Amino acid sequence: MKRATVEMIKGVGGQEAGEGFTRVRRSMLSEYGSPNHPNCFVPIDVVADLEPLARERTGWPHVTQALCRAMGGTFVPEPEAPTTGSDLLALSSQLSSEFNDAIGAVCAGLADGKWCGKDGERLEGELDQLLRVVVQMRAVARFTNDGASA
Image (cartoon, rainbow, N blue to C red):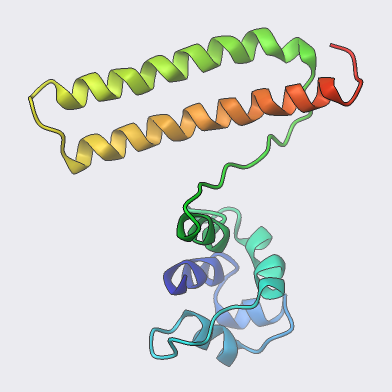
């Protein structure tokens, strides 16, 4: 959580910039990310203030993702563009393609007879892409379940 907090604060321009977007001063922002303050963590309202502003920094949303991992889950953002039932055919094609890419990563990783960290990294990236498409399809399902027509 500490590392994720530091990344989030960097994403808003650092502690000095961060204090302008939330209720706490830069000294507290520093403590939230410091391993020297093991019992001091960023409050959820401060995360809600800062995390949206750190969107451009790799690993976003930093604290939310770290919390999801700590709880045994994965954060997958909802699609930003509205989806309709007419998107289903294109999403089905993407789903198949991403699934095949994930299987390809497994096959490539095992081709030399041993699975290594680099293989796991590649597979994780492919699975992240697969999850994004699945979430988009879920958004279409929600759209159609809400009584809208395809």
